[in-house]
Image 1 (cartoon, protein in one colour):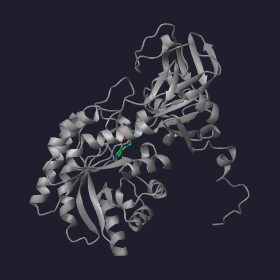
Image 2 (spheres, rainbow, N blue to C red):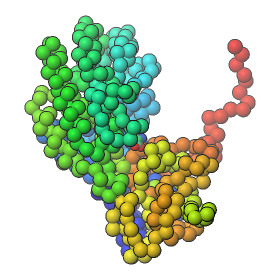
Image 3 (tube, protein in one colour):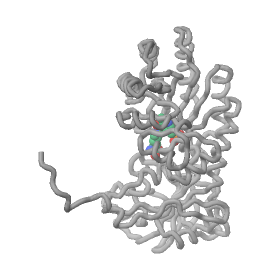
Image 4 (cartoon, rainbow, N blue to C red):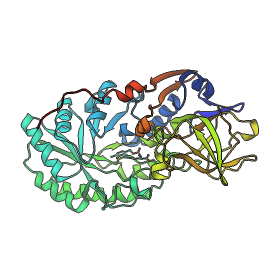
Length: 433
Ligand code: LLP
């Protein structure tokens, strides 16, 4: 599933020993495996090859410029959700014509600048947004290519905070309204309606929600075609799972086996928007033990990474397998699962320095004994890890390193205190109103 393996009791990323990376670049440290990233991308691409899809990597999942450039060179297109992400892909050398622009709250400025860059397609989330895009495009004398994001009202059976395909969420347009919205579009010079977009949630570890949503949306495609609209594209979004707890997610080919037959031969250009399934297992967070302490019956291991580096456990109660970077042979973990039982482990809470009790990376976790200075690896942190980090408690954001074979490249330097203060002012003249 990835290229983070123990060799003689020492965790390696590809051919590089994790302790050497920590020595050189410090902790906390995000480490990505180039080979894992590319293999995940290639596997998706091969699994869906019959549809010849455009794979729009979800920039939000892991947005480092070096990662974007690497995936672009492999043939990826991109899914962006803000002016900032659009800027990122341009900076990475990507032509925005190879990008789709999603998100429920695009501002006029974002719409205008996306049109100026020649964005490939807007994924439109509401009638109001469609009207703004049309007006802005018409004022500039250009045509915006759009896909209407439909809300299929299907339960993706994932965390409520990352469920997006149910009617009660803010995303997309109800299927039964979509047909009317399209009819109302007739005659809008600024809009080229290419087709539909959906994104059910994340992670979606079962395939049925995709089947149900695609079937519903294909009915809409047929109805719109019967109304005389030329529908040429369907974007089925992202959401494919990753391996957090053992190998819990279906493989790329398992998703494809069920999804491809539904879409083949339908006269539709297919778009996928995977993020997590490419990035999650391609990155880890390395952290060093600062202190251990007891409070009543509870034992705490306090490390130098916190909710500021990896928010997922605090925000969603997400499970990330964590394990010491250096272990005796008999403690090399045979798998990465929540119920792993290895002799000699002690149940602890793995916590960070941030001043909140919600600041934990793992709770009630049986881990090999840890002492000050030991390194711990938090696995499957490549997606929605570094990108969701913050400077809360005035902490400097971590460095990021990309390993390829026996080489490592610093792709984001660690922030400094000067970075923390760079945008603040105490001496600017006041503005009178
Ligand atoms: N397309 C759209 C429209 C999305 O909103 C997302 C993710 C994706 C594609 C990519 O989904 P993926 O393939 O990565 O599952 N912070 C949460 C995840 C939020 C996902 C947001 N949207 C987490 O840490 O689990």
